[in-house]
Length: 259
Image (tube, rainbow, N blue to C red; front, side):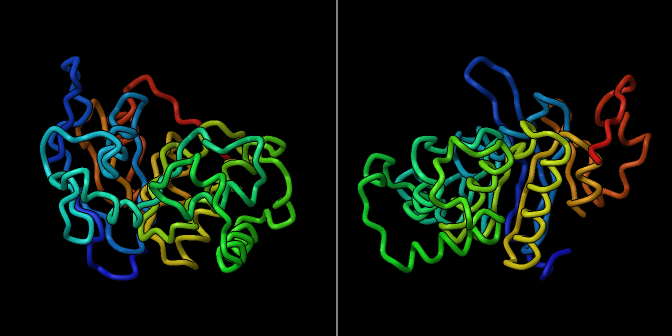
């Protein structure tokens, strides 16, 4: 549940039309309160990933507003985005780690934010940053793996390293784009448990794209559902019954449980 009733993120009439004419988002509006663990669901191609990429301006929206702490990110010139992006963490389905570098180095690179990767590989990090990186590795249960090369870890462990790396920038909100789509069911719950811990213990707001409704019901009290780029549901995840499931995923869809 939210720590306050004040929205940290307000999406207002957001639309995205790609150059080929495909409309990925169509007049989407919803708000996320500070402290929420908020889910986004829908079929592949429903606009979930486009939504998150618009929020942190990896891609530019066609129209609408993205109010983050009252600042409209959609209208900010790119040369003014850096300060806001430092407050917005991003976790991807693919872990985007440097496989030949150590787990600790990968986490420390999160400190650099928008700095170039090449520059980061030659930075000598202060002890306080190293201490924080080790603390974050302990949060995600990987403190004993700090010397390992990232490529030596399992998929679930690599995603946890990516989470720790993201937390190095001390984000106010964390955007997670299908963070468990590449993982097996047991590992998926382990990663989602760490997101839940971060949300509850560190107070970081999380907006998370998920495929499986069972995970949404377990972890994200509030949810918005997209279908064909349009919002078709917004509210409590417990309110998505069988009828709503069919409206979101289609009449022939079968719900798959991740236990």
